[in-house]
Length: 381
Ligand SMILES: CC(=O)SCCNC(=O)CCNC(=O)[C@H](O)C(C)(C)COP(=O)(O)OP(=O)(O)OC[C@H]1O[C@@H](n2cnc3c(N)ncnc32)[C@H](O)[C@@H]1OP(=O)(O)O
Image (cartoon, rainbow, N blue to C red; front, side, top):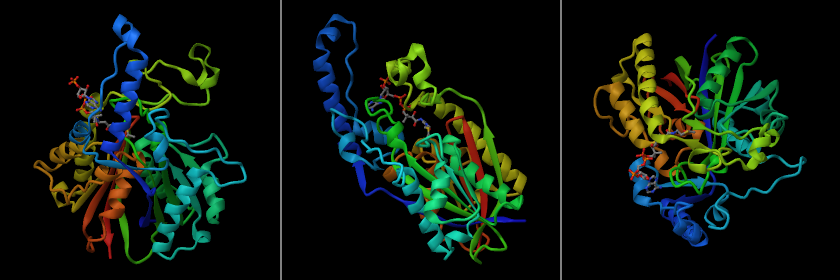
């Protein structure tokens, strides 16, 4: 039983926010906060907030802009957050809607009918509710058969989802499995946190994983995959269903995070993440390449997780033993920022059409957990 990747899909929000726009809003918020708190700052009981800087953002991360679902409120210094109106239970939920848009594109690209899909996995960092599973709603909206479920491995949700789909196919549960990654990362982002306000964007991706017996002639053979996790608090978000039960935490308004920022949103020690995740991922890629008898230099492309450009350049250098050419490790985070699990899939979707029969590549995710997933693929055309 061989599972292959038959197709991918991408849904991008129409609005984009540049670093300059984001920084202007942030700095206006900072000036107002400092004015409102001038007495405490003067008395030394509060620290003044510091301006952000667009040049720093691009240099430190490689990010130039991000696509977002709710632009105006994010840039309103009085709000500094997306505003996504709640929907009634009779309307499709926003996460399901985004997932369906990406999934439809993946299906249409290979002429696959929804009813031929036997399983849907919604694999993403932030699920919008406890239950029913968003994936079951996607199944209903698309009209797929079989079953559906949600899973979350943060930034590695898509690669773990692909490998889970492969397992379902091997176990005979389905011949055609849709893995979808709707990511509204701006909603878990603290736009008042200077260290992180620039990091994330919104998007949805889809991957169609199929048994070779039903797959199109042109597809991506999965040579092999490896998943790893290693516990770390360096990327953490304490949002969850127990928040309102914590007596010491004043419900959702806990203020225990790094530098007094809310820990019910994304918080990270970016420097530590950088230092610890780079060797973890480089060793993963090198170890698996050896196992499959592939010289990493023969990989035509590595579609790496899109969190930080400098991090990707360093990982590629450790793996290849030399500086990487941009075509070999394409960048989408300049335009999309960090879109968590979707990042490496956007790169794969946008930069894979030039592959010829037999050429090999690597989809690789890494992030919170820590978690990392490496999927080695070979083009069959
Ligand atoms: C879903 C997921 O993918 S989870 C995310 C996974 N996370 C990652 O992969 C993160 C990897 N790490 C990173 O990307 C980087 O560490 C970054 C971009 C977060 C930060 O870059 P760094 O170069 O490490 O910056 P660092 O936080 O050390 O700050 C360096 C300086 O810039 C300053 N700085 C921080 N933010 C800003 C800002 N917005 N504007 C201006 N200056 C800033 C800091 O105050 C610091 O100043 P100092 O040297 O005077 O103390």
